[in-house]
Image 1 (cartoon, rainbow, N blue to C red):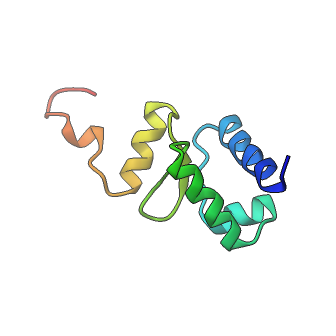
Image 2: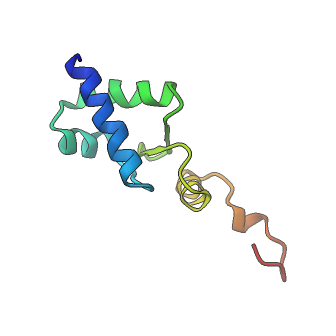
Length: 92
């Protein structure tokens, strides 16, 4: 198995083992001991494959995490949140 495929499997594994994991490219590069340019390419490929999503501040999180994680992720991306759509006197 090529080294980049091994690394992609490791990255997927980390995201699957830690729901809610959110990393910037710099954090990912340190975690996986990979140069920043290479990790950006790998993370971008995982976004294109539909495995990860990217927030406005550049953090990457796994698509398909729980709804709660997805809502917190969107909130940090300046996207409308579930709590903003609840009418006064109603609960989410």
